[in-house]
Image (cartoon, rainbow, N blue to C red; front, side):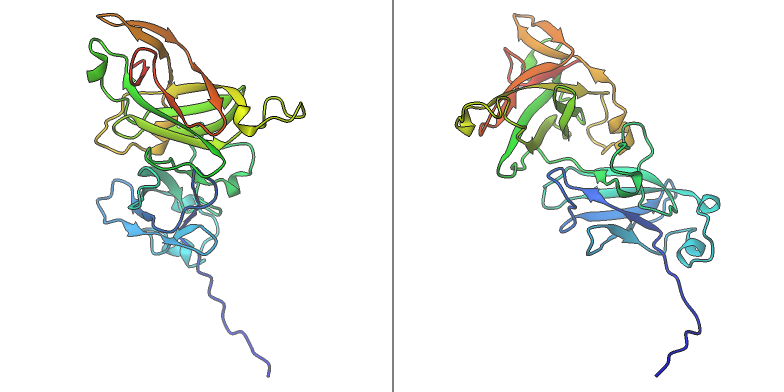
Length: 281
């Protein structure tokens, strides 16, 4: 029996995006993701997780013509929306970011530092950051730190460096990027790099060590408010304290911090002479 198509109905989502677990791949199950027209005072609408690991929503304010396929050029309809992400399971830190909608591809950030050259922008996921209490996957290195502002007096009462952006590098290669929570606590995890003596005489994996570098970007953001992701990524690089000694403390500053990572041993980073890692405010 032949079927005659009388009409076709195209329905596009007002937003489609991908959230990237810092341990790799999508992190859909258990997340709470919502979207609202920025600064509108309207109630937020939930985004729905798709089987492919993306998030989508329909019925967004001002996007009816786009969702219904009545227009193909998104530019005249452009409006700014804010997305909020929370994880009741405590795997990742809460985050929020703003995107211009509609887009004829996955929604993406346009702030500096958010877009890599590879993969293409159409496949670029929006990053999430691990909560400090999360355990690293098997076979991954873990780096933890309690970040504090350089103390004017007692190091034990120093202000937490809330929302500081922390990076671990091997040479010029970025291994991991993490975000301190409101208390200044941070955890970064990444697969162990290639052994420094690969191809040499066979050795136990536990004998391998790597020289790494830790850097911090910080701008003294309000610990009571989850900052916008673009604000987090725009924080300036700050010096770290190599040591804090004496009374009052005498600070030995440095641009970055050298680390020695050993296979199978989680690494807790702190300023010499203190229980926290001190950063220039």
